[in-house]
Length: 474
Image (cartoon, rainbow, N blue to C red):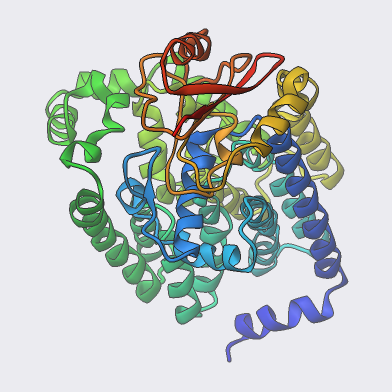
């Protein structure tokens, strides 16, 4: 066992600082879990994406095919995310969506541990390492993504940090295990793993680990995109369903690639603009005290995710709220650690670094949602809960996006956020016309209620404060 490996196993046992960090991680996990639970209880979760994942995991847990009735195809046709199968073991204990909130909170908070270990590995002192770990926890994306339903992408955040620590410690088998977990979360993350491998191979001189990650990333990306997603998706069009975010670059993957290669003006114009400048400032600012151009080589690993976010016109990929920046953050942290180890920070007092992190969190974290937009459904909260209690576990259900994650433990459920949807195949239809989710136009639910009331064969069994529950008459 080499020195770095011995350090890995001895630090948790003998370091009081590491023990205190475990306490901080536990507290952070609890806070994140409580926040996501409260948000869900206030009906601010959505069918897209929490309902999709919860239904799939539930169906796996009861031995059924995870065919998503939100997507209209097998869950593996979405992102080739095999991670849902081990997550379903938790639902075998007790099927409850709060497992996902607990897992997500724990995974996000746990990134502080490899951050601390990487700092110690780089030669930083215990106090410096602890400050860096706290800066990770206070990075706004960590808090914000926890409030955006559930995404298996969160595993990439601590996963990359653990992978780098293990590669530097020459722990190849553990390294391979972490890489496998990341690849199981999303097919597109294979590109991040491949670029991680390239960085390890070229810049870290970790030939074995780098080669494994580079080859595994390339192979898995091809398998996921060319085999798994087309096979489990409904048709070939599912492969390109996210490419409309890049429609200004061309139609389809092949044309977009050709245009980017043959038209440099198009490429440069898509990257160098004010929206992207604002995005780059946004993602680097929370750790801006430690950004040094000479120590940004770890950002090589972030190139695939960063390129996708810069090239798109889809605004959700240019903020600190959604999951799209998750594969970038670990490499920013690695860059800051490298700069700190070389004593190349903008300022070096730990208290100032802590103050900077707190100000960044205060400015960019979305904790204010709890006394603003998360209270928008409060006036119909009791009525919605009463109506949900009247829905049979065996029913085929049509409901609002916000209500659907509370009813996804069934084989058939869809969102009724489109006034023109065919509702006649559903046993029960539960609609809150007060809701207007991001996925539905204003008034769609109200129009749908009028259509259902005018359709023979449906009986209004509950109506209270703009909440309607219809039963299909046998």
